[in-house]
Length: 348
Image (cartoon, rainbow, N blue to C red; front, side, top):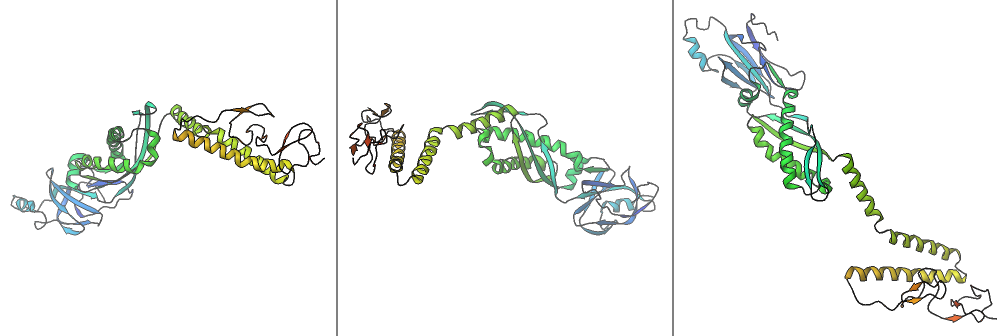
């Protein structure tokens, strides 16, 4: 479409070739020589606003429109002027793109301060995307576009990003106590911030259709502290892990030596160790402060053991006596044929 002011405009239409233009004015430079009776073609995703002498005097929806007194009442007054419609109209038409513009970016240029209930005062960066559309064309033109020949998402994106970040800061402070709980709150945060922003966007004739948070990241040193905390959670019950591994090793040894006396002893010792461990855990968790049985000494390794233990948790020595070696006095398992200490025959 030519924009030379010396050319009388008879057909006015516009195609958004870039996919980013919110508003496009015809003509792009100055006011145009629009012929009375010119054809105005508006697509389904557009609205047309007719400006005369700096004011919006007509709005057009989808379809083909003839610019005449039937469509623009103010033209009736023009007809009464001395020159009537003999001279083309000095006017402009703004085409407004009503589609939803998606994948617009927002984010913090500088880290923002956040008081974390567990980590203290930290600085965060946040990023995301948002979608918007124009729902009040005249308000949008008068408040943001002004007299520009075209207006794209590139020109409005940075400004709206700053508006979003300001609301993000306020909402984070009110709704989140610690960033350790953030992963489960992204959706709730997005909806809450979008609800607050819609009023701000509506002042410009814009509708914020969707807002998404893609990431909220603390500085590297805080990320390291969070990672260290996660590792501590893995190792805080290391004793339980080591006992489990020891029990599994003893179980394998018992299976490999199922017919021998040691295998039988290990097989009997393993459930006793588990029973002792979990009994102790339950007592601690319940806050039971009753006195435990008097400690005794293992005759084999001389370590202290609980009075109700059946096996020594350190060396596996059987504390419940079934029979003893006649040669050295070593406690023996029921199925033992030889003493595990001196090798003396049990039956001999």
